Length: 237
Ligand SMILES: Nc1ncnc2c1ncn2[C@@H]1O[C@H](COP(=O)(O)OP(=O)(O)OP(=O)(O)O)[C@@H](O)[C@H]1O
Image (cartoon, rainbow, N blue to C red):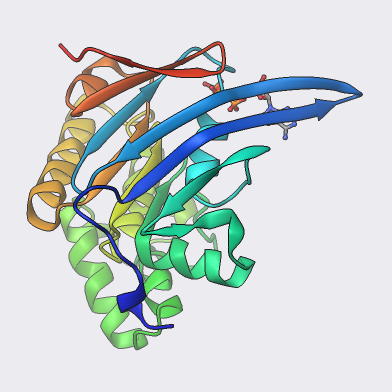
């Protein structure tokens, strides 16, 4: 199927409809998400907050196609994620979504440029083209002096910025971030926020961000809190 089959409508890049998630732990059912619904418009920036263990990562994984709900549906670019094949799901993820996790999962044997170039190569771009784009993104996150460094040669904040560059390099419709500025000092966190705003304005990228940082949450268009398994919108500012 061609890329045109991915539709990021004005109305919703992502829709999460009546999602429930229950884990079965040693015979006990643990209900983590209870009838969660969320619609994310193109260019919309959403913060998800909630106490530890409230289900934020579970929800983010579900929105990102990593873990199916017990019931309910998640639709990305008009396609119901967990009703397609695994192959199709990974195509949707690669084409439509970008991910930044707390543990950045960079490949240790590859340089910063190579780590950022990998999603483009998976999308069938030539290695030279992919490396060029990766360098541009690494410059944007302030790492032009670290292009050939491997993850072990980078600081925690630098690794985080490589992960952010990797998530953004394919210009995804929606970026999912788990504590994107958690390990960063104030100045670097502010730079990353500025980069997100720039992408949001230039490319209408949507962001869904799980965060404990109230400053970051307040900069988003809408804030939701996960509490007792439910997602409740709280008034910004
Ligand atoms: N695979 C699993 N099997 C069983 N229980 C799980 C599983 N994954 C998560 N849980 C449980 O679901 C609940 C929500 O976990 P989750 O990681 O989504 O919370 P969180 O809000 O992201 O927490 P934190 O802010 O501490 O990262 C927790 O009680 C956790 O123990």
